[in-house]
Amino acid sequence: MLHDRVLVSTAEAGGERRSSAGIVIPATAAVGKRLTWAVVMAVGQHVRQVRLGDRVLFDPEARGEVELGGREYLLLRERDLHAVAEAGSEQGRTGLYL
Image (cartoon, rainbow, N blue to C red; front, side, top):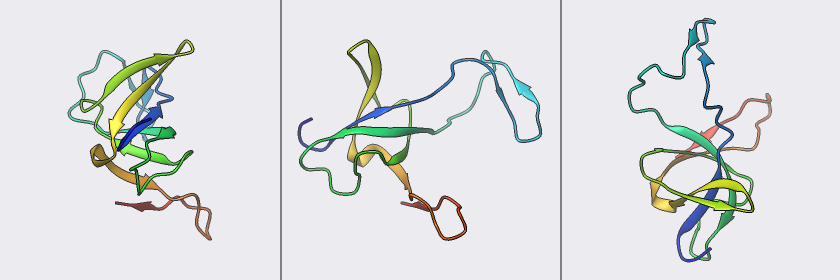
């Protein structure tokens, strides 16, 4: 990885999903601008805020797709990331920092 690039892997299921109330939302449903979570797989030498294994939030429209070893990854710039999830807090909740 070069410069400020971040390689991430999404565990996104392309199919239907459920809302918090249990309503099934089909894969064909139009969704407004929705940010996506991914796991950092590699970072460039000029990346300062993100480490390997961090969970990051990003806009899926600001990405480049790449295939390595038969798996698909996304290539982002560090400045395109919106948030990083903290590992875990005292009460077992996940915190965020922007």
